[in-house]
Length: 336
Ligand SMILES: [Zn+2]
Image (cartoon, rainbow, N blue to C red):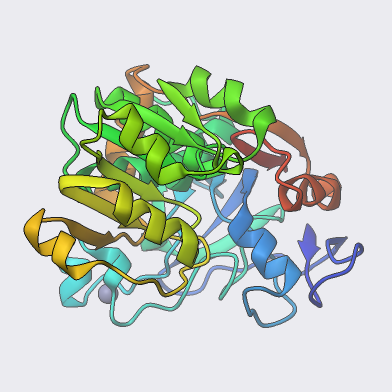
């Protein structure tokens, strides 16, 4: 088969298009023919060496494909969870204690004509989803849409609450804006890239705050008449963004941290106590949350924002855009 195989970190010629042996399913495994695969920052981190992987490696998750010989439309779970530990059995699969890592990082992923995975890692699309007409959009549901959906549940966002999204113009951030709006929240996008403000508003942001103008905390407090916001979702997670986020929280405010830099930060403990605030970590999603997100798309309540779809052979060019933050929403590669 043809595949993009990574043999080393960094440099412009990392994403080489080459012949690679077809995967063969062993016991408990299945092989899918890949149709599209998302191109996000997680795999860009692996390509650039900011996330360690073993070589050679086919990168890529957020996959739409068809199980070979069966023809059923499937996507894949991002985590190689075991399926039988206490976390897997209580629908907390991302916390699996026997986890084998991530698809496209610790095992070969979707930048190829075929992908082989343990059969239980594949998730069949609901009949209502037309994955043949919109394979890239359906593929990115598994992460870029399902993760923001899960965050709403993790933070128990209620209609009418104010939700600020830090990194709102990014691949997950823009979908968080979309999902928070779907949940009837008032949404404030926090974003430094001025060329993404329009997309943030289109996705549902009621206001956009640019940290480059200074005073994010003051801006968020002003927009809530001094009360502070109910929820901040931080997709950047540097020391500075997280410390600004906690200071912008109101009474019973919740900060959700996920992805990004995951740097350590200081919390004003007295405020946490007196205002009953909470800090929540959020790790990927469950299969059930993927199916919930699929249902939302099937009902037409939300639609994944995929603005760049290129052939597999153009992976290098797509990752240039991802690295420079020039993709609005998600990019994906078309394989078949
Ligand atoms: Zn498990």
